[in-house]
Image 1 (cartoon, rainbow, N blue to C red):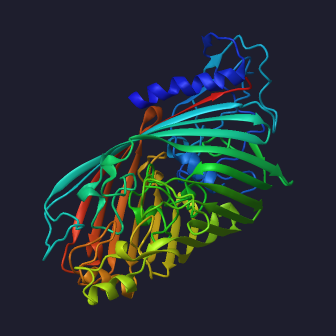
Image 2 (cartoon, rainbow, N blue to C red; image 1 turned 90 degrees about the horizontal axis):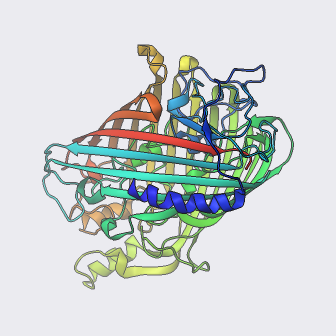
Length: 544
């Protein structure tokens, strides 16, 4: 929180220089009254990021952005007419699935404020949001025939992580946004974030030496432009990816700057956000998608998206890290870069039925498992070592499928599958070469808790033949290495319960059962218990 207080003043000062708005006086307006044009809302039982647009289909990455923030809505306004606020939910998050919203706060004496409510106008020029997410996990002793440098500890342990985010944005024109976010990370995951391909806490910093990295960093700095191409206007809640209150159903969007590829790709309404849903790396994301990023999960690049109603297409060019899972990104674009593409088909938009197909190619100085094994067999290295055989211009490529389907009464089904070629070391995300996942989300109305939800998922992860031989011979990856391997697929069963509390707070107990941790049949199984505490806040400055 100290980081947030220090950076907030600087960021607000910069936005205020653009606003040219005199200091105001706080006043609370009368409660907003619903009007005839209140947008369609889902039942309170629907999942955190499943709010539909007027066109009837989900907003994919925008829903993920909104699900990061929950709870209290504040607003800075001048002369906001009673009822203009329309009772709209602050975001699509679990904290406001029922569409309830609290009375905004007015900031008066800004006489030149544009009147709110104009579609496509500058009624919401500035936006500020924040969140805090704390995860505590632990496990007891479990059986292990042997252990190595990168094993998951078989003696009982506990660990925790916390993340604080400050999101800011400004609408410079009706279709042009500038977005700037700061993130602060504390703590460390279990076993120094090693020993599991499907690690149990997505907030955990991934590198074993992550304690040496900066604690506070810029997570996103983005220029965003939207070209309207027609179609029906869709209601959009301001979030850290887009600020416009309404967007057309047919549009082309461009982003340039720093972001996470996971902001835009591999979205799933029911398994995507570790702050409101599952915690495991391979239940919230496709484990075989080795997406370009630095250690905290961000990169620089360019992103384009075309939305044409039932079909959407997106593509991104992004920087890779200099070394596997490294803190610093490489600028050698001739031989170190990533291409990602995805197609969405909303085959049943009114019930959130969507299929997504993802493809990617990473080019980087990767180490080859075959070369590492050959050097070891020749006696050139004491053990196979991919770091000793890295060569520029090597390509890792892979594919992913992603499916979701809403069911009556707020239930939701989801599934993923992914594969990559597995010839080279895992470079950015996790040591997974193929994965399959399926799960179900339950609505809280079953037990008369309309704002709550729960989920259960099963994931099965595997690695290529060369990857197995490398680990069996004593090789180490950035995440795995037991000193040997008796191979078996890593199987994960995870369940959680999201308990929504007032004022944007939520608590979520989480349990994960992991069989064959690190693909080793002579280790485990292990049960990891966790508790997540989350708080989110958004502040919206109107038409300054």
